[in-house]
Image (cartoon, rainbow, N blue to C red; front, side):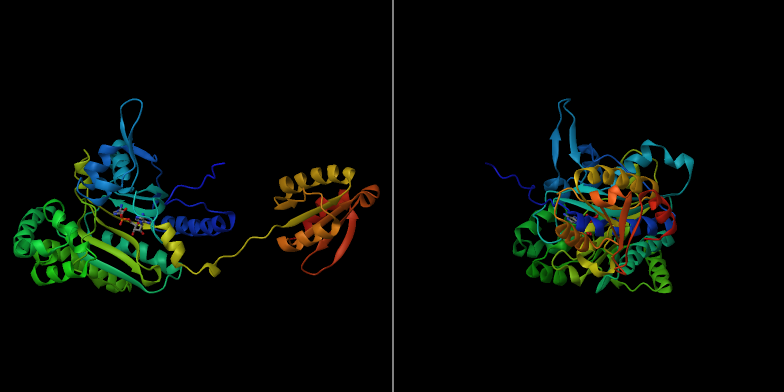
Length: 420
Ligand code: HAM
């Protein structure tokens, strides 16, 4: 017999894990709403072209990580590897700019990238993120960074670093890339194979290389894009940093932070945590003033971030979450009692909105009591044929140990008057 297993790079979440995920998700929804962001949900797959045009042909995501296929209608489709391009697509399609000059959108959703799986890196994963569309101003960049930072603070994430940079406007990019390539001419053959490939196709990404030899060669030879940005780009960056200082968000200016997606301009940032190991990026983001126009919309400035939910959950202390125990464990013995108990359990769930665990394995009283204890239910109801003959039911308060017998018809009244 074949034993089926989940696909490499995907994970099952069992109920104890889902209980933590749900609490985390609820807090994220709350934080986003407090900041005035409204949730957007886009389809799980889109036209492949959206990502090619949005993220860039030579990025890792587009060149090697997308799950793409041609459907029966000959459409080339892709499971979304990120959400900024889909959000921009929806923004254009629904003509949101006509409704309001400013849109604050957030998401918490599933994504797919065919990366090499390891701790904190899956092929199916989840991101929460925020996209502020409409403002070209640095206070918007600072607010986006603050939302990301405050979210991680709320979850008490330790050892965080906010890495911040500016890669300036797209206009200086061509000039800078020319400068970068020529400065590396004499050392090109000493770079690793990936970097040699990147020089022509995606030279900014050289700075992401993990090879220490490449980094030394870059340090010795390469100009940094930040040193080439214009005065107005510098002013924009300066105001972002002044707001972050004023708000009290510590950051470090990392002139090598260029980010791996082509749509960025001006501010780029990443928040890392040492508690994560090799895949240490909790989130990444930045400004993308050209993306909406590139996808067919009007020129619209925007800035946003996205964070890996799996990574957040890896980094946080699980003991800050409460485990939910049932309100009632319902023990019953004997055929007639079981039938009546089924009806009572159903009534309690509907009328009193209690969480009721109903015994279905027909275990002995002792075994059912043991199970009730294990479930940590606050109250145990016991109905046997003997009680049923008297139209009574036993109620045991598991906290105090107190046990009493009451009329079945008085159960409603009991639950109306008790907090248990
Ligand atoms: P990104 O840096 O590709 O940016 O991803 C953002 C975050 O998603 C990462 O920092 C990481 O926490 C998480 N992440 C990425 N790939 C994986 C993976 N394979 N497994 C688990 N977690 C992962 C973006 O996606 C941009 N759209 C962010 C953005 C929004 N920029 C502007 N607005």
